[in-house]
Amino acid sequence: EEELVESGGGLVQAGGSLRLSCVAPRITFNDYAIGWFRQAPGKEREALSCIKISDDSTYYTDSVKGRFTISRDNAKNTVSLQMNSLKPEDTAVYYCAAGRDPTGLRNGRPDYWGQGTQVTVSS
Image 1: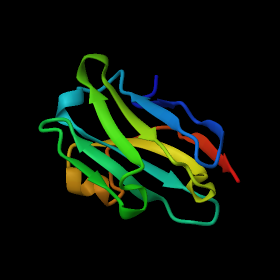
Image 2: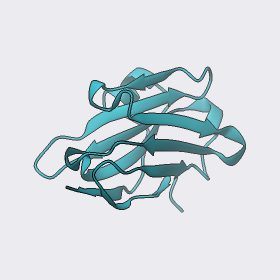
Image 3: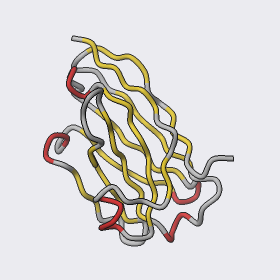
């Protein structure tokens, strides 16, 4: 059984919305910061957004500020990423990650990675 499981990817037209979910069935949610990353073909994996479960503080990279919103549901051990106003350049595999060290998580050094979910935005 995976520590992190993503869902919600798919194909959407430019300007549309998708909601990604990350479920963590095997880790103690409150001990971790949770983040969303993406990797497009030929590009490096980039951190999009992170949330610290302990105090709900959030981080967004500039390219998604105002369009993406991260949220959590502790009772369900779930973190979601609401993605609005999607653009073709948002096309990538999206990954959920969990890390005890929030700084390490943002720098791409989490304790756990999910398997990824494909998001494709058509023009």
